[in-house]
Every structure is written in structure tokens, then in C-alpha cells.
Image 1 (cartoon, helix red, strand yellow):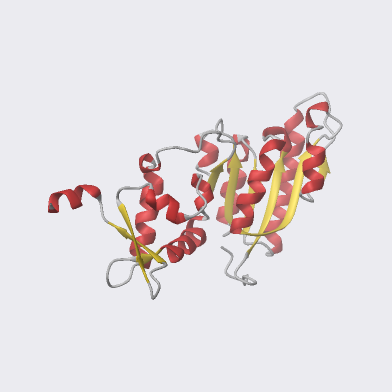
Image 2 (cartoon, one colour):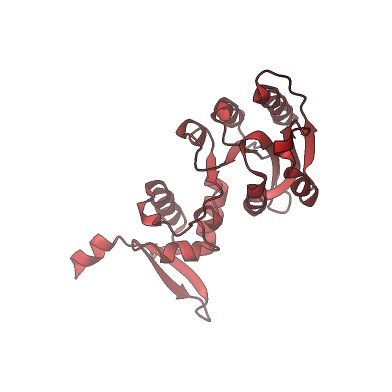
Length: 242
């Protein structure tokens, strides 16, 4: 994150750039919802040749979410190159303005991988939103890549080694002398360090995420026993103690 910026009211300032030719308009509501968990979306732009019949479905989405449509005139050649160049120019202008904490790109096009890397090089967080078809080269270029349009969110989170790793780190960093962490504090740490929220994994809260993972144990404390704590207790180690 750009350390020269101060976060107003605890919210990060986010700029969203949408490649309409490489992500469905049906997924934008999900993109907006997830981004609003991260911070205030100050810039929302979508790029495309709006004369094309394939993009007619975007009209309602653009109006509903106050997204600025950037019209790109395309000729008979490569239709996407003109949009790619314009997006890159606008992203670089934002980078040099020092007004944003994060830049989000909604696209499944791996050609944007170098741009995502450049955003990170400049000290800003780069968040990508794309469909399941997105290549690893694109996913790995971002600080965080959010897959959208997944119909079945009932996946085995314990098999996600990356998730297990960052959850363990979050608990270890935020735990008290008893080895327990406030779930709310864990969530804030993950949001700040990895730009992740529970919705990234198909859940409403981090408590729901932890309940699906056998290596983490949920307990309650506080005066009314309504404060949720989490502790990293691998199932294998618990079984050995018995």
C-alpha cells in the first residue's frame, strides 16, 4: 500500500477497471459486492466498443452501479488491443496520482498480467476478478485474485493450501497469551495483508470459514460468552494427545 496515503474512516480507496470483452456483465454485481468489503470504490470504468451487439447486456449494469462507460472504437483488426491499451493508460494515470490504495481489474485476459505486476511494483495492491478459465499467469500476477461466477461454492476449503497457510499466519500473528485469536481481529488482518474477506471463499463470515476447517477450533469468551475466538489446533496433534 502507498504509505503516503491516509485511510479515511478506515476504508481504502479503490479504483475498478472493467474489461467488458473478457468478463460477463452478469458477474459485475458480485465483483462490486466483494470490492465494497475491501473499501470505497472511487473510480468505476468499463471499456469496450459499445456499438457491438455482444455488449448490449451491459447497459443496465452500467447504470445500476454508476459505472463510467469508456467507448473504444475498434476496426477490423484485433478488437481487444485498443481496450487493453486504454485501460493500461488509465491505470498508469491513477498510479501516478497517488490517490488510490488499490487498483482492481475485472478481466479473464492473461495479457493484463504485466499491468498487475506493475501496479504492485508501484506499491499499490492489485486485485483481480476473473472467471474460472483465467490462467495461472494472470492469477499469480495480482496481490489477490478473486474468482467470480462459481456456481457451486460448497468446496473443500481444507484442500486450499494457500488459504490454510494465510489463516494459520493470521492466527499466529494476532493470538493472545493463551494462543487464541479474536476472529474479528483475524478478519481485519487478512483484509489488510491479503485483501481477503470471507466472501472470497463463499462464506458470509470468517467464523463460518473456520467452522468448516478441522484444524481450527472455535471457542467463545467475554462477559456474555458472545465473543468468538479461534485457535490453531491441528487435528492430527489433537488425536495424538488422546
